[in-house]
Amino acid sequence: MLSITDGFLYNTRLRPNLTYLAFCLERYDALRASGNFRSRTWVIPTSGVIAIPANDSYEYQTDVPPGSIIWAWTWAGGTGFSFTVTDSCNDVALQQEVQSTNISQGNVNPGQGKQNPLSRPLVIGPPGLLNVVICNTNPTDAPNTQLILWGGEPFEEGKC
Image (cartoon, rainbow, N blue to C red):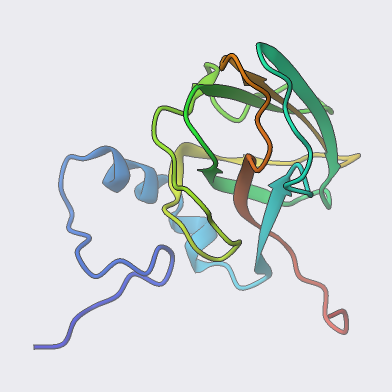
């Protein structure tokens, strides 16, 4: 028997059942069928050598092409962090509550690691700017911690 792989998450064990993941993927059917997006990951902060101060926060803004879509996130680093991501155009948050990072993926390279799908995709409006706040609740400074946002950006013919 052939193993059917879902081309969105590359998971061979997806079944139509009443789980969070199945409901999320159902909301993504239009995106999954579209052909004008190319995969993209945004890593925040871009350098792993930036240390997030103990009991403090790191605020960052990243440029994203307008019309891009974010569908999942991965946390690379330790536990004891929380983060929030909002679209600067309309202050729509990535998730309705601050996300806690109780589970760490350890060292993750873009293109690897477990994706945590959002309950709905976030479409980024013009001017294409995301506000990210990462809070460190640990008693020590934290280098080598990064948030990876998974998504897609509009693909234009003739551009690489």
